[in-house]
Length: 355
Image 1 (cartoon, one colour):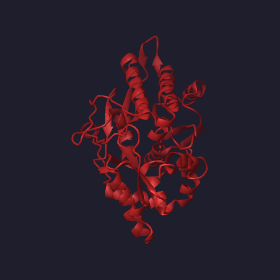
Image 2 (image 1 turned 60 degrees about the horizontal axis):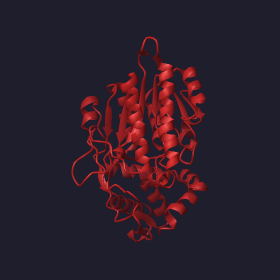
Image 3 (image 1 turned 45 degrees about the horizontal axis):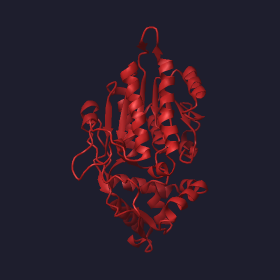
Image 4 (image 1 turned 180 degrees about the vertical axis):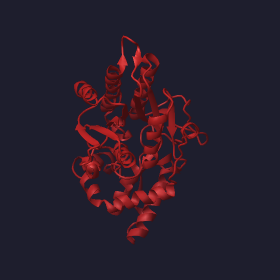
């Protein structure tokens, strides 16, 4: 039985990965660690809460004692680190939190994994162990109108969020280069799909459209992102964890580049037709002051993971956006629960004043 420590398991990508793994494998144990901050939601794991292959632990990846105890108790084969503060707007407002979670938390996980897996006297690592860091294409900075990020593109982060993720990546690489730790790093493009917290573009717009609220669009809305359906990403992470070459970075992209304004207009069109609601129109769009340091374009070249591991994105955007809207329409209670309280205060502070 393979034993995994999954951090950030109650967040968007982490919870989707838990569902994916439990659906695919019978003989695994997932010890799922999450601090349950605003974006960590146990409702994301409600359908598997009684599954004996899934053990939930509430805690902080920065907690040295807790992480050490988990390694001693479960003797993990793999650590997959999803845990991160991830919203750029929040990082601009409060960068210190991003350093604590994304950098110091990663270093704590690396150090505890080294303590558990490395024989200091023999200078050898236990067989079959691996640490996988889930990162982002934002560590590369911005692209011009042509070209794509590859694994050799220099790191050039522009926001406190992406800077914290780049720093974490460098620590992961340093543990490989210095100690020989078995690691991989994956860098993904913009994910979308079920369970995404509605501060991110797609669920935010779905929720606002349904309630006839204004749709805040940064600048001219022509910022281009490569959109990756979350289940395709989960498949890639599983493949890298199992078969990725030790020490390698793998870019995971969807080949689905779209401007933000196109995404917004697609959601409007879909919901107008599905809900048969004439109040849903592009008149809801409100262009607001652009984000500080807003990167203009991201685009990933996923040829390496395709050639090395046989992974490819299976979900075109036209299919993925329908699946995503379907999920949010069918899970109104989930959306209502996460958009109450602190989230609403944050939304008002970050966007309402601008519109």
